Length: 87
Image 1 (cartoon, rainbow, N blue to C red):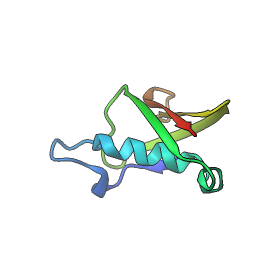
Image 2 (image 1 turned 90 degrees about the vertical axis):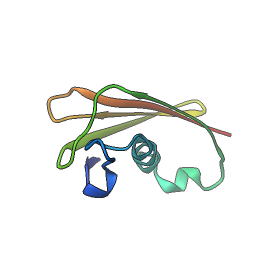
Image 3 (image 1 turned 45 degrees about the vertical axis):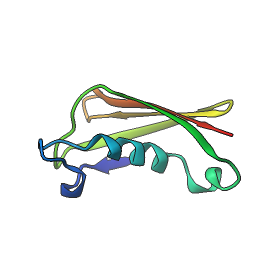
Image 4 (image 1 turned 180 degrees about the vertical axis):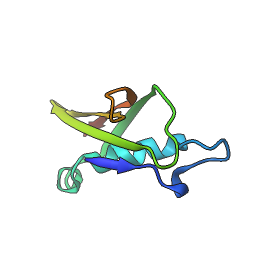
């Protein structure tokens, strides 16, 4: 999916607030997959700041009990990586 950085995502420093990356990671995993499980752990690695009007390309893969999410800019530079574990 593609996720633009909105004004409401931005903190006082002018870049995306770190809590928004968790929202994006959760949104990358389809809601149906959360229906009967509990999100037990989230790990996020912040790799590069995102600014208003940036577009983040979001990729998601599933492995065992976890989802791996990566956000990158149009040039392929990683913005964040996340692992969401379910139970």
